[in-house]
Image (tube, rainbow, N blue to C red; front, side, top):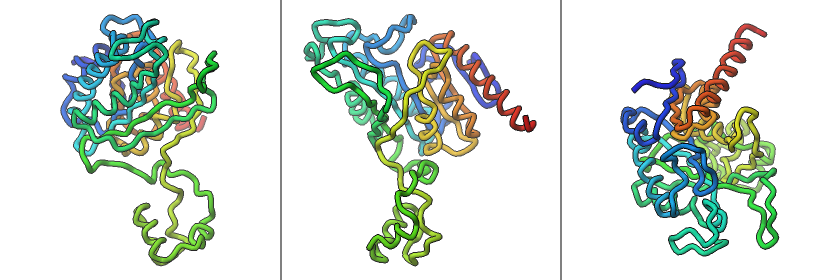
Length: 305
């Protein structure tokens, strides 16, 4: 299978996601960070594209097929970080009378959790539901419900034990180390905190206080536009956290719905290798352009420019 682009660190493939995934080597990927097309919200103009299935059930079934292949190419200690948005039955695919599967007009479809539970049933370990909170959500002209300002990011794993670098995505402490240890906790309680963080605190040494608190399950990240794209893109901070927690330098990061290549771009920026799959060749051209810009920037920094 010949990549559409191969620059040594990044390989991009053009084609149907299932066909390409089936040709990748088993156990060749450390982590997968991706955001598939949301059901019923956008026609990308590609025959066979995921997201335009007539019913949620058919969409979920296709997602299970895709991520079964993702699980095959993951290492045994690999992780999947899956970003999913939702839709309403009245707007999905332009339908005005519901969208099958018992949905009524105006129902929230619940695609993220339908997919998460289906993947769990298919053998994935569902480890965390993370709320991507958007301080700058898209405005909505609704008056009978709150404006949607969040999406879900699920952490799923192939095995019960897996690679996860908690230190890489620690959040700043709200207290100084002195305050942290003087907060009325006993030596035993401090020691328990240290075990959670992977560091000893039983001696109450300020030097052994974690550099930050364990990452929380609500991530406040503003959306960003990318000038070359006319579709929604990851804000770089979102895949960055997943890549840093789910892999180490030199590991392979997969995005089977690579779009404009944000995951691959961030992966290479942090010393990882990347594999991307995209059905739309126009989006692959955007990815190549972004990666070229990153290379030029890296060369300039290396040269002291």
